[in-house]
Length: 166
Image 1 (cartoon, rainbow, N blue to C red):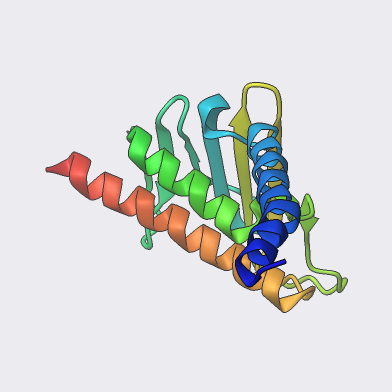
Image 2 (cartoon, helix red, strand yellow):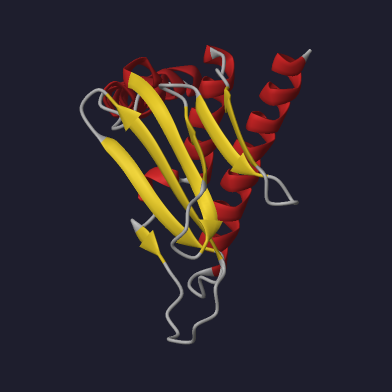
């Protein structure tokens, strides 16, 4: 058997079946992805000190309420574009939001009030809700991922508010 025949035989028996299997396997994974943007409905984002989540945004209704630094409550209607919602969906996916535990709260019993966040992504058939306490003392990489997602959501809301004000 020549050298060229050996290479063709190797490609036909090992490489080609491996590539076919990869295409099939990853194709099924993408097709059966648990959270697809095509089924996306809305985002709910609430935050505040302790159990008082006075600052909130709901992308379905566009209702956005937040307290300013001087304690004044601002209410407005803020609509996010499809591109902004897609960006948040992808950022949540990149950070592994779908695998976060539902509650990431402070474990100690001291009465220290720290910022608390509720993040909810709603889809046709299901939704994912995470309650995150800034004093969470669990896995540092999980804490970092939560903080990064929160910053991204707040950044998108701030930018949309600036664009809408123009």
